[in-house]
Image 1 (cartoon, rainbow, N blue to C red):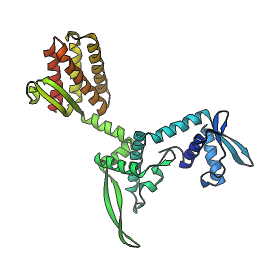
Image 2 (image 1 turned 90 degrees about the vertical axis):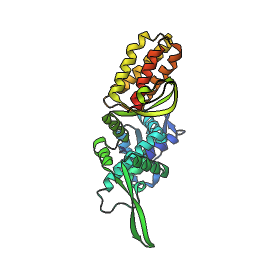
Image 3 (image 1 turned 135 degrees about the vertical axis):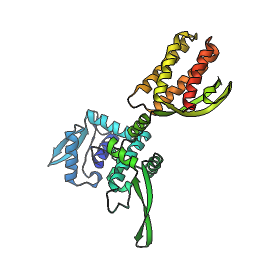
Image 4 (image 1 turned 30 degrees about the vertical axis):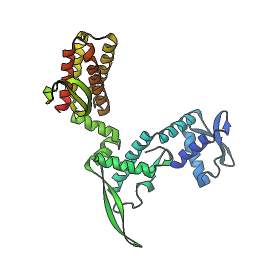
Length: 315
């Protein structure tokens, strides 16, 4: 999944961490004895990083005695560190790596009882995923229906033992083969393919939910439902059409125009993202609800609110 071996990332991180030893303002170090690697391994690693313009080296007696990060290398090193320490980025990577590992395990006649964390794919920019990263990723993938687990009994030196076998579901295999283990893209594709997204209607006062089976002047809190993408796009067009006749202050109209534009853009994507559509839909409803008490066209605004609520509650 990553282009470098874990030892190469650790070497880069060592250079970044030892920034007090610099050469022309860039981190420098002596690679001798690094990570208990052999001289030939260090030479191969330094040559690879030099070919990638990540570092430059000075040699003596057929061995690099000084290595220095280039400007590109310094930027890459900081990017690696940022990605490693960003929880969302790290967990997304852990899920992808775990899917790839489980995919290969399905073909193994003797699955590795040591598990994912013993595999080379348990590394991310030179550092191993933690037990917490692993457990969280398993739980998430199981909840999404991409992974399932089974306990496999074994006969060990001290009697019967067992280990957990991680198996991909049909959806998990599809995520690996068609989406290159990218869980986010797979999720977004599923949402867009189904043509519906989950949205929160939020809190609205005075709405007439007759179309959705509600009552006049009803206070609704924390209500959620699903909306059809095409119907939501049409509703956004309806809101745009009546903007000139809403009779509300200019700053309120500007706010509503912006939220409607965001909703239109979100629903117009080839594969609409659930989070983006849901946020824009909810925000548009909130802005409309706030306008009911400040507009002479309260009845028209209320109708738009009811239509939007009915989209979700009726779905």
